[in-house]
Image (cartoon, rainbow, N blue to C red):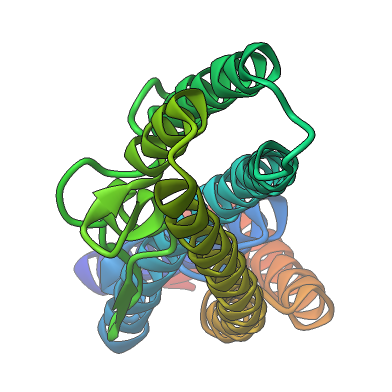
Length: 276
């Protein structure tokens, strides 16, 4: 009889301990806002959360790449706008130098300004980004990953931008300066054509910058929408429903209090009460 009572008390203590553990777990869920505190709470859900977490980490990296690329494209477009203005000025100078009214001294002044313009364009070709890296890659354009299956070079290489017909823009300007300084009419006419081609080429490159900017914006928007979807899915799996958790907490608390009260009443009985 005494053994039976002892076993019953042991079982009751174990039951109340389990209720207390459940109560504590719900309290932690409410305070943290997370339904799962450890992988063993729900192995399937925990695995899904881990998968979503990896996707979110990748998306964060890609979004950072998009923002960096957008800054580089904007910087490149500003540089090319300046280059375009310089080339337009160079062509105006070359046209004026072709006039019969310009003397040798005037042509020398024009040639000197064209040399200065060539140097400025060379400086733009060597532009560096905020990290001190070349904005226009010296060799191949830098290819960047923006999604699991999306990679491209947002900014073209220096050779793509600053070389036309096999010659750099600066070399074309220096040739024009030499032709003007020497008064070589045929060479001056050829330089006008070269400068016209250079202006058109830079315009095409700026159009490419516009296309890159638009593409990056669309990719960024897509990543932002995906981030929202991933966050919603993760919340549905991981986050606790506060209304349900609070109701569960109250029910478990009442159950535990009732069990403790009953246990206390039973323990007030004497051995003779139990035997009687």
